[in-house]
Amino acid sequence: MLRILVSSLLALSSLFTPLSLKEEGIHELPNVHQVPRMVTMSFTHDTKHEMAFNYNTDYHTDTILEVSQDEDFSKDVIEFTGTTSKSKVSNDGFIHQVKATNLKENTTYYYRLGDKELNIYSPIGQFKTENNHPFTSFVHLSDPQMMEESNALTYGRLLNELTSSFDLDFLSVTGDLVNNSWLNNTPHLEQWEYSLTAQFDYLKNIPLMAVAGNHDESDYDFSSRFNYPLEDDQDGKGGIYYSYDYHDMHFIALNTNDTSNREDKDHATGLSSKQLTWLENDLKENSDAKWKVIMMHKGIFDAGSHSSNISGEDYDIPLIREQLAPLFSQYHVDLVLQGHDHLYSRSYPLTCLLENEELKVSYQEETIKVNKDNKEYDTYLNPKGPIYINTGSASGSKYYSVVNYDHDLIPLEKSYGSTNQMCTYYYVENDTLYGEIYELIDGKLSLYDQFALKKDDSILEENKPNDVGDNLQNNNNTLITILIVVSCVVLFGGLITFIIIKRRKHNG
Ligand SMILES: [Fe+2]
Image 1 (tube, rainbow, N blue to C red):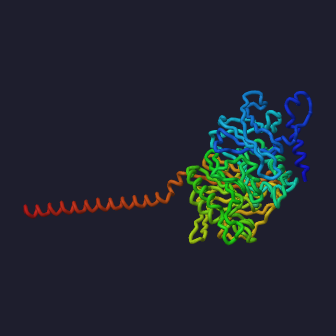
Image 2: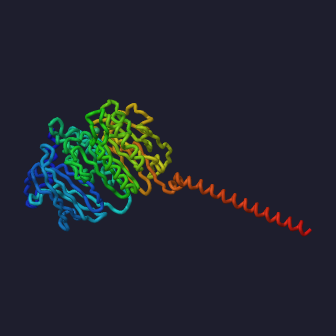
Image 3: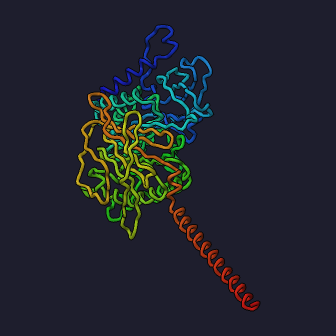
């Protein structure tokens, strides 16, 4: 079971040989217990000037981040000191958190993490701070759910293909990165080694923005792996909710583990009121963002058994659907990235309203064809609600079938129970968000589906309901004016004619 962990650590150790010893030609390995593992890089609220990092060591070490525009770290090295704390997860060693701040925007930096005094550093990674060009690209992955070594191998193949095929700003992972790394008082922390340490070659150059799935929920397990902002006074025990901006896009990461009375089916109420309040405030505060994207683990509109509560054990999902879907409609969310059901499905743009405790769902079917780069995208012009999308399994550790779902409640345009690993590549260019859905077949990305959302403000202006009303009012006003003028002319003309006739009679 620990083979991959040991081999990963030994591989890392060869890279971590103290620099001075390397120079002397001495091949002494550092203490593997002091080597940074499970390294993740993530955005802060300031994507132009900051980057955050998180990692583990078995033994206590200092937390130092070195950042340089020079790959050899021979000049202009900026050093940041972070925190080292005992992990809240049992047998998990120490958690290190550190941020790079006051960076230049639109600049490539190299980084390494470790302990300066011990002269043990992570392999060198790199990142680029946000630029001013409003082109964003990211990949949505879900449910790699690492159980065993074979899952790490397949997941790595997909990450390798993705990072070598696309120039990505970040990864969006909608949960279940592991498969219960701490359950029934038994730690299985090697699952995080499969999910993070074993993938570091692919993850070291790309921010990883994730939400917690139900399999990542063990006490503080998820929040111990990522340096996301613990705003809203959260303790991070079962996951974290947070938001961030990138260019003209606003992303909201929800924690679907954070529900109330979940153990009591009759009294369960869905997401906690605290998280709901935070969500609505966040949506209000960011109503001007051109694109709004939600990331959440439990899918509320998809073709899988969980979303339809087939077993009766997913009674929280209908509750969460009733809480969230009307909010997403009200605040003009564009896209909802989901997981939990390991299949591909894509809804129409949905408009949802809760009336007398019943969810009314309507949808927009009309699309136009947009051709770009020899691909034809079914495109929703000024979509009237968010599209809800599941992107399949990123590792193939578990695949789900499409179930006989209620088409009136869950209007889906496409659904597909693939038995290939899947992912979705998104990019935003000008007024259009393009989505390309890929399967990994024979080790290569194969395009399965594509769609787009286009926002055309000129059409929006013409079709605004208030404008239609104003136009009708204006037309009415014009008609009344014409009638008054005609009436005046007729009356005045008649009066003049009457006076002339009278005078002629009098004179005659
Ligand atoms: Fe799940």
